[in-house]
Amino acid sequence: MSDMSLSPFRSHQTAEEILEPSPLSKLRRRIFKNHSFLIGAVILILILLCALLAPLLAPHDPYDQDLARRLINPFWHDKKTDEAFLLGTDKIGRDYLSRLIYGAQISLLIGFSTILISGVIGTALGVTAGYFGGRVDMVVNFIINTRLAMPVFLVAMAAVVAFGASLHVVILVLGLFLWDRFAVVMRSITMQARDLDYVKAARAIGCSTPHIIIREIFPNVLSSLTVVATVEMANAILLEAALSFLGFGVQAPTPSWGLMLNEGREYMFFSPWLLALPGTGLFLLVLAINLFGDGLRDVTLERER
Image (cartoon, rainbow, N blue to C red):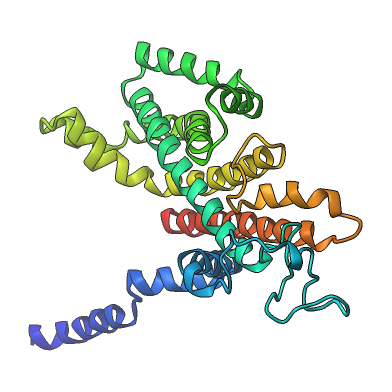
């Protein structure tokens, strides 16, 4: 009799378990409902594929010069076009499509390298200050305030002038000066996480401080860290483009989008596509990163709620 009375309850529980979506299904549903995340991810993946497959996609060597073919118009113009150069050539006859494709490599390399350097520095400082507090927090706050008092763009220009303009110098300078947002966000989140029950439990059973920080706190602040990384990546790409446009960043003949804007500005009234094409590429890349970061924030916040 008791088995019969329990059987409907058991069947009801089994039905609920069957109807309950899995965590992966919930995550997939949140992602497909978030249009910003999808649009940003699609554009970012396309640009990333173009950068990775540049040797296969580029129709010409981006460094080959041919003054006899200088300033060929792109395919949508009616005069002085060449089917071999779909997007035309620049002032010294280099294929513009190939330089745009390889320019995506430079921008993504600078973006990823910068957030790797700045993320390590800022996360280490922020987590240390947030977990220990007290005098450690005061020292880290002083370092953060000192960094915030320095204008990044002017300091980057001075550093490039002092050490020479090159791709490696630009990456190193931006990485060493864009860690403040990582530190501020990680400090705030770590201060909240250190008082939670699971951290107190780990501390009560005798876990070491490195174990608590690495195994207990860091996985729970990782979602916020990725969102900050996307914001700083877009910021680093724009700063590099601005430095290259002013002649303090990546130097010729490297196909940087900022440098291409600098080289095309003297032809802006006669061949405006020399500015429009790298500017559009830069706009799409930064837009994709920002949309992806905003969508990622919404997805992770909804998961945490």
